[in-house]
Amino acid sequence: MTATPLRVTALAASAQLGGTERVLLDFAERAFEHDIALRVLVPRDGPLIELLNQSGVPARVVPAPKIMLRGSQQRGRLWSALPAAMALPLWARSLRSHKFCQEANVLYSVGFKSHLATTLPFGKKVVWHLHEFPPQTTGRAWKMLARRVPDALIANSKAVAEAWDGQTVRRSDGQIAAETGTNRPTARPSDRLVVVPNGVDLDRFKPRERTGWIHQALGIPAPARLVGMPAVFARWKGHEVVIEAFRSIAESIPDAHLVFVGGSIYDTIAEREFGEALHESIRLSNLGRAAPQFHILGFQPRIELVYPELDVTVHYSLRPEPFGRVILESMACGVPVLAAAEGGPLEILEGVRSTQNAEGQVRSAQNAKGVSVGGWLVPPRDAASLSSSLRRALSLAREELWQIGHLGRVRAEDHFSARAFARKVADVFAKL
Image (cartoon, rainbow, N blue to C red; front, top):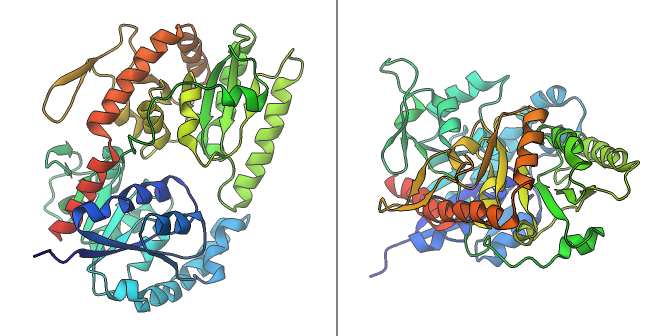
């Protein structure tokens, strides 16, 4: 006799293809392997819906009030926060009446707006997936809600778990991940919070033979070395610091080229304006050069084909990253990474002497040049340090870079597969 599948309805705050939505896709494509019948509801249309439906996961739009969606498109977002919050219960009531919610055993919230929606009574078990640190201005209120609303919480890194709780946190394998704060016997999220690092599809993101298609698309000479930065166009992602760092080495390494991969995927004034400013920075950086060394490739729906063309990937956010998906994707493709040494990247690019798989077997050793497993950790918000690290990385032969990238691939296989991620998330639902 076949067991009845567990019915889980995911509430997404967006149908665009940011990092949070890609993590949801990783789980959605594998939920059936764990006897979970997953359905997804979003506040407005977007590419996520088509991808989910193509994967056999029903996804529908439950339209949210325009005033709730309009906040990010206004210059003064704080001014729009109050009316948007007042409109949120209208969306929550529409969600509650939708059959996907009525038939669900568990509601799985993956964004701040959907977290808020679950504060209204649904009569279901609720799981919050925490992909971000608590907001600076309203963090205390969010932590209070985290104590009272969800039946379980999932954090994508130890750093995020500690920020939401600040006390003992248990990883998905039952081990202690962190222990801070006081020993007051209070009901805290740690009682229901597990750390489940994001995973990567190792069949999609994998080492491939270099074809040179980026060189051809941008008119870059074939032997040139590429430093790539895949990231949404947002100021906090650090594009300007990366330009500053690369500018200081560009003349001495004329065969190196910096390629920004991405665009403004969200319809916000801040992203549109920064995207325009970034194009202007690229134009100015190329002035006076015999040939352009700064480039924008644009958004690539098949980003897995970008990494194998790169010699090095840069991930250099100006504030701590909750996780750092780009780092993991690059490692899975066997490409070394330079990343800011704070937040989630510290947990991915661990500067350890060996990495062990689940059976405790040592699979790789730290590179003799002092790099972490799969790349370099660089002091954050420091253009000079980033410049020095870039120079060091580009001084290596491609064979040496390949060896560093190979260690990253091994670490991704052992610790960050999408299949293991989906199993651990499914375990959280099953325990409810």
